[in-house]
Every structure is written in structure tokens, then in C-alpha cells.
Length: 316
Image (cartoon, rainbow, N blue to C red):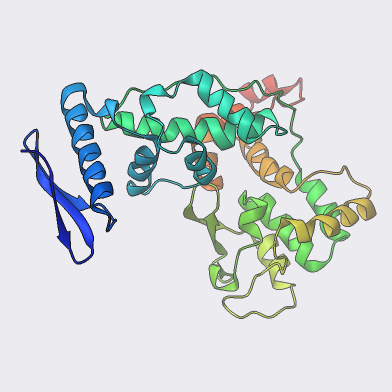
């Protein structure tokens, strides 16, 4: 039975059964001619789905809706939906995704193109593929020149703290001893801390989960030395974002006469120090909020510059 249209108020709706599926919906128009076209298009789409499978009609916009319905992250999706719109997923291939990355971010680095276009596009389509609605998509990423990241050490952190204001010094110490990202650290509120038990609730911005971190005594003391409004919802380290902490950070580094390391060097130093102390990558990943032990080992597993390490094998 074909779809028929009928009026409800001023708006035309359609209903009927196509390929044993009961369909009902609004055309969102008061124009009968346009409503008939919409109903005919809907009917044709359903027959196409029935004859050629869901991949024949699945659009990128629909795949995004399914992705978000599954409570997945919406990071970077706005530009992608605007770009792909109702493009059929089956027509999106590796080459077209790479072209989209260049078109959307013409002056960006390979890292940005990979993160903002290739990764989320793959995630959306492969989620639909997991529902048997289309085929999986593999996209070759743009080559990225990896640079060796230098981790902060406890000695570096101590020198930094000695030449920074209490807020900034405590912020540096917090990132180094908990593995928090700068975006996570500047958003810690007083209600998230328990100075008595030495714990902190960290809302992980990148993976959108929470974790509870242990704060060593030296960190508790550093935070205790901060003189500020301790209302539960007030920020502990006073900085509104990484940008407001950027220049004070550089000034403190210069005063201390130490290497100009970044905020992330503290998180990097947390992982590296843990690994060098013999903590296994799985535990490090859990404590620092990394997605996998493999990522921790590959990114932070630096070799130790000590030719006498073999002596440890026979130490009692």
C-alpha cells in the first residue's frame, strides 16, 4: 500500500505500509503538492532500503544521529555534518575523507586534520557499520612528524615552585603528581578536593569521565598554602584557562633558570617517573587517566640513561 497524505490542522502528514513496514510522519508543510513529493520520496527511500539494504539509503547525517544516540562524543562533529550533510555513507571513501580534511582545515597541521576530520568521520561510520548498516571505513592518516617530548622531573618541579606564586606552584605540582592535563587541573574546584584524605576528583576533559587521584603530602601542603576564596564551587588554582596561566608560567620558568617545559611536560613527567619507578603501564594508565596501557608505554616509555642497570638483577 502506497503512502497517502492527510491533513492535521494546516500541516500534511503521511501514512501507509511499505515492504511490511508501517510508516507515519509529518511532511512539515501546508502545501499539498510539496507534501505529495515528500511522501513519494519517503516511499522511494523505503523501497530502496528494502531492495538494496540499509547502506543504499544511509546518509552521514543519519549516521551521526545514531552515533550521538549511543552517547558518543560530539567533538568536531558540527563541521563534519555541515560538510557531508546528506551524502550517502557508502559514497564516502578514504580519499574523500582526506580531501575533506584539507578543505575544512587548509592551513592546519597533519595532527589537526587527523584529529578533527579523519578520526571522528571514521568513528561515526564505523559505529553505523557495527550496527550492520554499512561497511567499515579505513582511512590513511596524514603522516605526522613525531617530536621527542621532554618530561618534567621532580627536581624541575621543585625549582619551578620555588619561583612561582603559590597558585601556580601548586598547579604545577598537581599536574606532576596526579597526571592531570592542564585543562583538567584549572577546572578543579574546592568541592573536588579532600585535603584530609589526600584525594582529588578529576573530570577528564578528553575522555569525558571522572577519576579519583591520590595527592601526596607535599601536594596537599602546596594546596593548603593557597590563600583564596574556598567556596565549594570556586576554582582551586584561580586560572580561568590554560591561556591565563601561560604567561605567568613562562615568567616563573625564566626566574628559576630552568628548561622551558610546557604544562603537558608535567603529565608527561608523571607517566615517565612512574614507569622508571617500576610501576607497570596498566597501573600508570589507570592512575593518570590514559585510554590504554599500550598508549602509555609507546608514548612515555623512555629508556633510562644508566649503563649499570644490569646490577639490579642481582641486587638482594
